[in-house]
Amino acid sequence: MDTINTDILICGAGAAGLTLAIELARRHVDFMLVDKIDGPFSGSRGKGIQPRTLEIFEAMGVVDRMVAAGGAYPPQRKYRADGGYDEQPSTEGLAPSPAEPYNLPLMLPQYLTEGILRDRLAELGHAPRFGQELTGFEQHADGVTARLARADGTTTTVRARYLVGADGGRSFVRKALAIDFPGESMKMRAMVADLSLTGLDRGAWHRWGDGPGQISLCPLMGTDLFQLQMPVPLEGDIDTSDAALAAVIAARTGRADIALHAVHWRSVYEMSSRLADRYRVGRVFIAGDAAHVHPPTGGQGLNTSVQDAWNLGWKLAAVVDGAPDALLDTYEAERREVAAAMLGLAGKLLEAARTRGDLRRGRETQQLDLGYRTSPLACDARGDDAIVRAGDRAPDAPCRGAAGQPLRLFTLLAAGGWTLLRYEPDGAGVVAPRKGLRIVTVGMDGELRDDGGHLRTAYGFAPGEVALIRPDGYIGALASDERGPALNTYIANSLI
Ligand SMILES: Cc1cc2nc3c(=O)[nH]c(=O)nc-3n(C[C@H](O)[C@H](O)[C@H](O)COP(=O)(O)OP(=O)(O)OC[C@H]3O[C@@H](n4cnc5c(N)ncnc54)[C@H](O)[C@@H]3O)c2cc1C
Image (cartoon, rainbow, N blue to C red; front, side, top):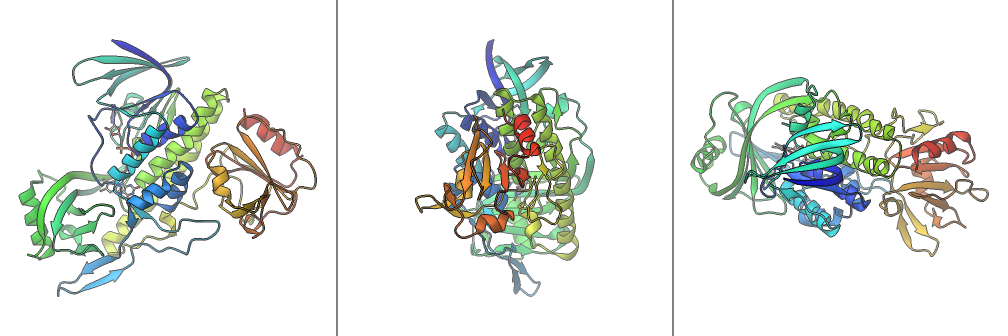
């Protein structure tokens, strides 16, 4: 039996596990990423990537690949009984703004998203180890001992400082920790499948019927496939054979001209809404669907899973590098509240779709307004009427470098450390440079020029004010005076 030592063992190489792996790899943390399946998952499942996740993918260096590989959501086309149809946009977006560069969700089948994340991980010198199942673990004062099993009967022992269960809705890690997963069944079962078919144009998300007899066929951007979604009876076996699918498409659409040629992936799942009571027990964490499951309405699950990992990644890296362990407690404090709100949203959208046929998706699904104002990591003296508060997402701003070149704030933030923005200061800085902290002076004599006033508008800056932005692009602290004790205590406690 092999024994491997590592800092972080990540169980599950889905969207959450891959994001966490990239964040650790970018920071040169030693980790091991395992998945029990033999090779990459091949279904479309979570196909909607929300604007906030696109911002995160920009920082991870993959957003342009994602956008090039996918496409925009087509309009919803609802067929009437007389054969005619009505169309409505799938998403409501405002125009992109200097502060919010991505205004619409991207459609990209989950297997393509995960493939791009694996490619990024490969560029950083790592890869998931498939065919390795976590079958047990014990915690000690200074680490976790885990057992991995392979199909050929061989096993590996892994000694890690921390274990992260990014192992999906049926999470082995969550169950092994005896974390409660309260919630409710939505008493709905649905089928999802990826199909090659002819007879439908790819310019619309086609929908027929209401209630239990409805069916939808959505062109999957970046592929030649359509994604089928339809409710199926809650009880009993469901025939998912190719012939049964062809028959149900004909019956529910009433169309003889839609020809099914191949079924590439299919799945039947029961909808439920559940939230884990805890995200951390000792040295073990859960992230993604392991911590929350909910109906797919609103396309929130993959996004929330990626953002869990995005929140946890820099914190794990900092603690491995010597930051206080208490930083890791802020992961549950910040992310569980976000998931609780997201569960409510997905349920509300499911109800609107079920009762009113309302399929529009507005700003609330875009995740740009999520933040951590009540977090222990939020420090500011501004009032609630301020344009941004500590804990909020740090807005983007197109600026110029001192040489006159265009330079977006997000480009600076993508480096992944802390950033202290000193806005038009009246003298030399008092915060000393330190590992992991970039100090950026904004002003006509500074390294960053806010000549369009976008930083001032987005942050409500007055001359002399400072913003300390966290490695994950949220505002940690806002202060009117960089010499004040609050900011300096914050820096002393939060940055190693
Ligand atoms: C029909 C449908 C539509 C959806 N649409 C959207 C959408 O538009 N937008 C959106 O954001 N989300 C959507 N989702 C949800 C999305 O698919 C999930 O939220 C997302 O896959 C969660 O990612 P994850 O990494 O947490 O878990 P998963 O993707 O489930 O990955 C978990 C991994 O852990 C591995 N694993 C499990 N146990 C072990 C073990 N013991 N040892 C080793 N490995 C293990 C599994 O093999 C798996 O690869 C949709 C889901 C469905 C079903």
